[in-house]
Length: 209
Ligand code: B1M
Image 1 (tube, protein in one colour):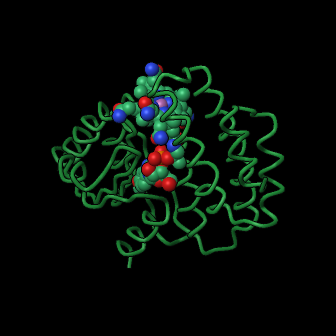
Image 2: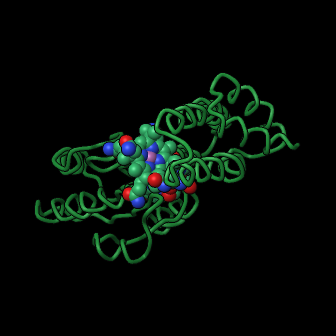
Image 3: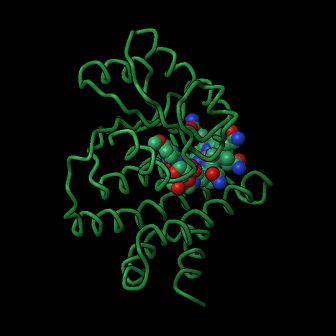
């Protein structure tokens, strides 16, 4: 078995004590983004499918998420130590919308954006609409990335974007998250749909050019 396959298995089994170490070893051969794309995402997708099919339950889903979080910390430390990139590429606010506590994807986007020299104002998860509006105003934010993982919370994404407009603030919105697609982007009134972290970087670079 390859190490990548082993990491996938550890995540599936929710073995959170073991994922950081294996991730550290894998960094000798893979980039952080390769580890995300080849191990984290496929494993979490499989966990999500099994959860939906009822062959795996919430405690296991949580264990798998924990196993990824530990591994992600390793990637974060690694990229931070590498980070000699210019850090004035522009500023972006990131938030997982109200009602939604999924933040693994948002945190990956944050890590990669920082790695590319963007300054990230991270409001975290389950962020109240008023808090997004107030921060944009206070920090004079022009580019916003919103994450939503559930069909139910896509509504709050739309409401957040609308509230920013209603407050008379002009922002460009990039949206992402497992359930998002071009149709949802249009529905919520965002400017861009980013399918992953690198696409987010691409839109941010174009925005600040
Ligand atoms: Co939940 N969950 N979960 N979950 N969970 C999903 C989303 C689900 C699809 C699983 C399923 O049933 N198949 C389902 C939603 C169904 C739907 O609405 N269609 C679901 C559900 C139902 C729930 C609960 C309601 C379960 C319950 O309690 N009964 C509950 C929700 C609670 C709440 O939010 N109010 C819940 C809870 C959890 C955990 C806490 C256990 C855990 C989250 C831990 C955490 O994030 N801290 C969890 C997990 C892990 C998942 C799955 C398995 C994996 C999500 C993930 O992290 N993916 C997920 C199934 C799935 O997605 N396959 C599922 C990996 C991550 C890297 O991908 O977030 O898509 P993603 O991010 C990508 C891109 O989308 C993009 O870049 C990232 C990197 O490539 N991107 C952006 C994301 N955000 C962006 C923002 C940007 C740009 C790009 O802005 C610039």
